[in-house]
Length: 203
Image 1 (spheres, rainbow, N blue to C red):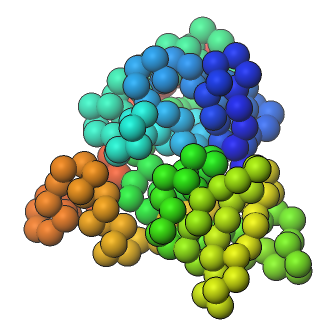
Image 2: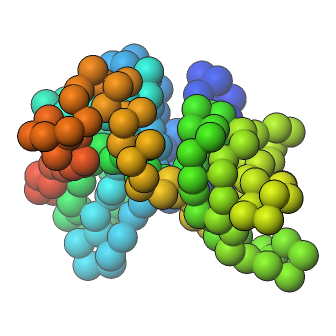
């Protein structure tokens, strides 16, 4: 589910085609600004939306101001590269607390927390898994199931994986960000900032 950018040693989500090309172009610039690309999707046909999900390089959530900076930087690159003919939209958001796990480093960073994963290719006749994140090794994500056994999931075969929102995850995220997990600050920490400016492509 993750891939290495050979030119910059940046670990990227596993993508193909247009999404992979866009990710490879914008990831180094985001890294220079102190951000990491968590997920990238291109949705729609007539006016496609490029969805960028990012974090700070230290793993903390980004703010609306960060979204604006990422949008401007990525938009400038895409305006020059012109990967999509005609008009397109750019949407930038934080990964949120119950974030997707798209790279090996995500499985390492959030070891001990609950997650759900779905595979493209069945493993022992099973596609869906839920349990405790145990890390990653040798290109595989490790998850401990409810029965105590461990499932070894090839990262390249993971269709989607996401943390489960729990009190423990909220508290850990708030502590990492220096926030109070209770009260107004805690409610603020649950939200994922998002920016969705119109960014017309070249015609």
